[in-house]
Structures are given as C-alpha cells and as structure tokens.
Image 1 (tube, rainbow, N blue to C red):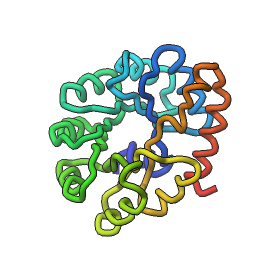
Image 2: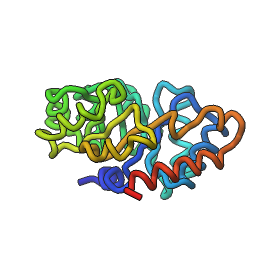
Image 3: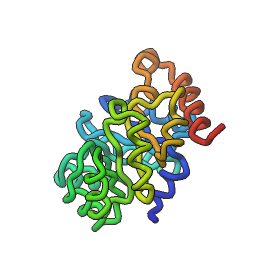
Amino acid sequence: MSKLLDMLFEHKIIAIFRGYKGPEADAAALALIEGGIRLMEVTMNTEEAAETISRWRGKYEGRAAIGAGTVLDVEMAKEAVAAGASFLISPNLDEEVVEFGASRGISVWPGVMTPTEIVRARKAGAEAVKIFPMASLGVGYLAEICAPLNNIPMIATGGVDLGNIKDYFAAGACAVGMGSKLLNKEWIREGKYELLTEQAAKFVNAAAGK
C-alpha cells in the first residue's frame, strides 16, 4: 500500500480545485488545510494548473498532498508529474496513464463507472478508482458495485454534501471527491475564507464519523 493510499484511507476527502488560480487559489487552499483537508486536486483544465501544483508543493509540503485532476492522457500526466503532482486523477480510464504513474511510483486513481472498467483499472495497476459521475449514479449504485468488488478502493465523486456524506461511506466508498461544496464561489469572491475553513471542518468531522 502506498503512502498516498494510506492518506486517502485516513483523511477520506479530496478537494477538487477547478478554475481557481493565483492568490485566490492559494488562499482557498490554505483555508481548507486549516479546516483539516489533506488531499487537494488541481484539475489540468484549469488555467495555470501546473504552476499552481508546483507552487503548492512548495507552500504546503507536509501539510497536504497536492495532485492533478482531469488527467486525460499521458502527455497531461507527464506535465502534472513534472510540476510535482503526488497523485493523478481522471474522469476516464486510460490504461497508459495508470501504467505511466505506476512505473514512477505515482498513485493514479482513474475515473470509472462500470464493473468492467473498475476491474480493468485495477489490472492496469490502479490502487483505487474514482466512481464518476456519482451524482447521477446515486448511492444505491455504489452499494451494488461495492458488494462484489469490495477489495477495490472506490472514491465517490459528485453529489456529496453534509446531508449524505455518511451514506457514501456506508455504501462502501473509501473516500469522496468534492468541489463546489467545499469551495463556495461566493465566499471566495468576497474573501470570506474563514467560512471555507468552517465548512471544511464540518466535512472532515462527518467523514470521521463525528
């Protein structure tokens, strides 16, 4: 088991940063870290994604693991790893990306939906998989696929909120991926970063069963 997988099991929440850059992104990231978030994903379709990953590795090393999201192919994976990404996440399954990461000791958690895709990802070397789009599939679907495939760690991404986060874990998810519920655009626009910290702490406590 890798260090990143250990972190995933322990902390259970991946914060997804899409569309944020510069000082605004830095302040939001720090606010989530102060709220207890320990895994942060910068999507590669965000402007200045590589620069953000590199900067955060320097600023937040030891406080949070910084990874890349929306990694669609090997070229994106190479760019993300060169920037310092500790893990790679995608909305799709590309075995070449999984194999690239595995050969370099980088955790890759690809996006999958069907049981066939889940098993294919595992055989390619993925330590965990991202079930997506979870908001459309629903918790019931997650419970159904986790029953026969309970040996494969699954990250539920999409549709997670304070009211249902415990349901995802009860259904079998080892972790959840979250974007807008952690990163309220209005609060960020208004500079109310303390509210991000408070919200993050609520999700961290819920994930811990508190």
